[in-house]
Image (cartoon, rainbow, N blue to C red):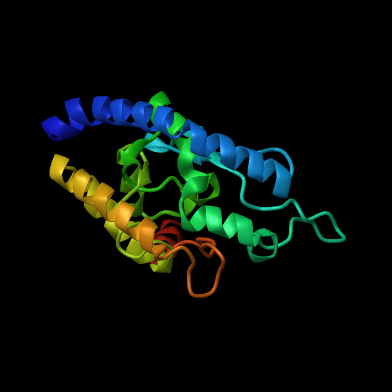
Length: 213
């Protein structure tokens, strides 16, 4: 690891996340009120996500979906539960603001591979697993290079590239690019989904599993 990654990145994240959280309290308060009014409670959405070395933590975000279910009690698909209000929160990345708490706690960094679902952990091939060699991030290289419009393979390639090239200038370039992407509301949805299709495992992983049997 570089000197920056080892000694500077974490204190820098803590400092800027704390300042941002304090400055954004009015925005977060209004957002919480509107979510409560339009979507009901709870205001926050919490979900288990794998962090560095695959250690699971609880990711905190603003809720953007309803809890609508079908006749069997199963949750409806994302595109059925994502309201126009929730879509707007996502397009502006306002739903991500509570995750500043995760940065302050040290669960995630400002920049790093995005934390995905715990269910995906056994689906990664050996190269893709390297995305967990560092802390996940609120934003990352994949988010400024297509976000949800990328294929899973493309996203993981960018994640691993970031792991291998963590620098001060690289992180700040991603931060400024993220601001630009948010203002343009670019890459929020994939071509076929309201968010991103579920990861089913790569062909490389399937071949590795077949050879190990």
